[in-house]
Length: 84
Image (cartoon, rainbow, N blue to C red; front, side, top):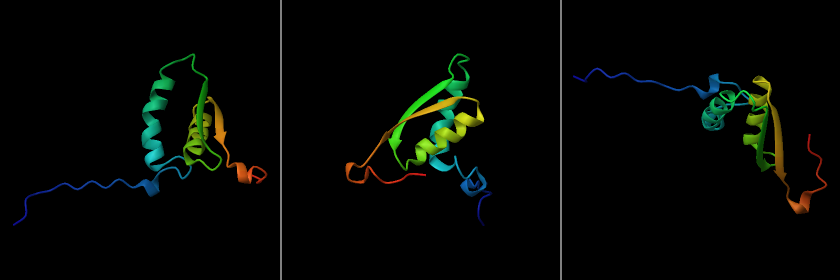
């Protein structure tokens, strides 16, 4: 006979599609700190042009009425690439 076991499953597919998974788990502590500081209105972060981290920060910043600013790295060979 097996002992009684509780199994918990975390469903990342049920979270916000723009700010979910490991990025959201990483940022939840940062945003808790930001929201505890009433004078903090701007968030500055860095990433690549296609950064999921930057996308998640943008979504969360907008959700909490903060302004997000990004330092984006580019690949010098593809600087003329159009980014939507």
